[in-house]
Amino acid sequence: MALKSNRIHKILVLGDSGVGKSTLIKSYFNERFTNSYQATIGVDFCTKHVNINDRIVRVQIWDTAGMERFLSITTSMFRGTDCCVLVYDVSSSSSFTNLEMWHSEFLKQVNPMDTARIPFVVIGNKADLGQYNVSAESVRNWCQLNNNIPHFEVSANDGRRVEDAFKIAAKLALDYAEEQVQFAADIPTVLEVDGRSAKKHCACN
Image (tube, rainbow, N blue to C red):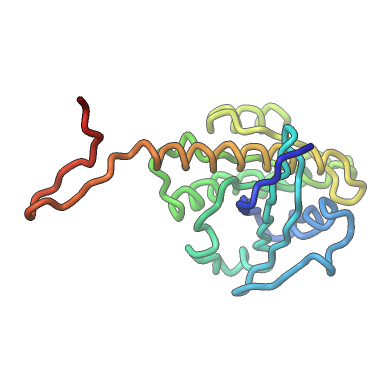
């Protein structure tokens, strides 16, 4: 029997306008878009339970579509993200070039203690169109330079590899969240003793 986690793991989807972010999420949720979609503070999100190594993990996918063209994605939308999915259109070289901007903006807003640890997944959408203006080598090199980000070419229209991409994102989100819990547990607690700071520690006999 699979174990169930109560924690919500947040996945933020970023990319240029028109790359198909909303359609991609709709495809992942098997077309049950309107039933599972909720609006909050100008951004949409939906929740799904995913089985990761016999653990039922609850992931929340945040869609920033419609906001990117106005650069109105606020810090609060980045906060608490466990994995960031960067989306480009395989037929648009500019949408791929702009991944660097989205990647940098995410790291700037989240400001993690270790930028190498926070996970990303890169998705090239619209693979069904057969119009490739982004070379596989360019994508591979960029992903390698940015800590070996997993990369998937998918089609939101026919569902090709969409499930695979988001399942990896969910696993990375789970791993990162658990790392953060362990990291927090390893930080010594600091107490104020007579106006002085002292680390809390166990008494030894």
